[in-house]
Image 1 (spheres, rainbow, N blue to C red):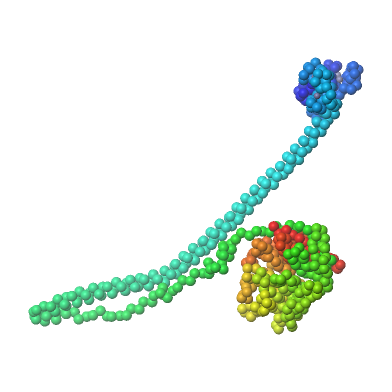
Image 2: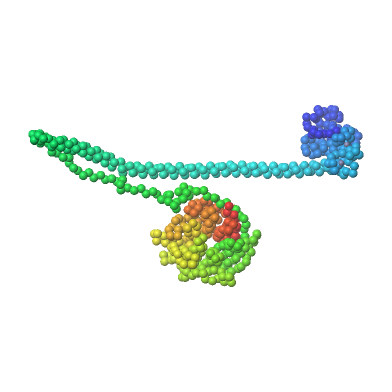
Length: 568
Ligand SMILES: [Zn+2]
Ligand SMILES: [Zn+2]
Ligand SMILES: [Zn+2]
Ligand SMILES: [Zn+2]
């Protein structure tokens, strides 16, 4: 008999089918297809003929997968042949991929290969199980993906609406402000003109009346004079009106003629959408790519060259290394013993080094340091090569510098052209105040010069931005998101291909991202990435941000780490 459908509770009879008394049915014999009570399993069922191999299933397990398997196993032994209805299948033909009975075997499966029915059954079950697992994994995956995309849709739409509202609000505010200004000005203009206009109009009316009056008197006089009768002339004389209007010179002060409108400079060339209205900026999502262990106490400067090599420098350890960053380690290609503060690549791919001494040095082919340019008696403490191949140098009268800068000190940034001739010197603002204290890092972007200026021995500082004319554009002193509120410890600065400015903030363990106008796009806490005390920054040709770090003072023999961060 075949159990093609799983037996369910509905088919359970009211009383035991063996003793026909007990209503407490506990078991079902799959082979006999009989429900029975606990007692009958031993008292009656075991005594029936060849029941020792019968499969008994507890009723409470009847719906389970194991029960189904057991039922199938029994069913397997009683499977009628689909061709020969009176025969039971007893083997599985692997050539024909079907169960066969004895008649089948004789009739049509000669020389075929066979396997045991239960073996094939087990394989089928395990194949299905495997598929089931795969389906479940697949479903799980799509479930997660669905959730992820739904969240993305929700988040994206929310952010879209938020920014859209901000843009519309800005538009409204600017429009309202502009309309208010226009209205004010029109009123002011009217107050200049309207009273004058009225005065002139009334003057004109008076003049016209006088003119008409005089003209009519003149006409009548003319008529009299044309008379041929002397008596008329004489009689007219008596009636002659000799009065004349008093001629007064009325001066009207016409202010509007002495007025001029000058449009504000908002829409001049240097003001773009971003300064007039605002702009959309990409918020970088810093993602750790790799981390490296240097053998420096700190990485004061890091410089990526195009050919996959980099230079790293530690001033206090008197170490400079030419390295390759490999998968997991730093491969040191050359080791130099020199105190380097800052490095830059010249237009002819020379490595320029400043050491706090008077000269900029270059590494010669025979790996010696030769003088590139001397600023004696001043000390060169920072160097940068611009896109136009100008060389910018930070200069001080002494190194290490003293804080605060004494009156007679020299704290200066100079620009040299490609031939190393001095082009510009920046030291004082327009009020003749010192611009810098310790100009320790310099970059250029869009014809402006960005300088990290350290202002005290506690590493506090600011970012000073000037144009090539030396005009101070803005000063950035950190933002409120910092761990150490209102304290800013800028150590290095670099710019991305999308013109964002990145500033490492050592004691706050942060990277500040600014737009070129000095507005904060984001202040990124990098501690969660495992990056602490960022000291030097560099962006390589692949756009990867390299962060060289300091070590904590308490960690005397600590070695600084270097991190490669995707700045997407
Ligand atoms: Zn019974
Ligand atoms: Zn049985
Ligand atoms: Zn058959
Ligand atoms: Zn066959």
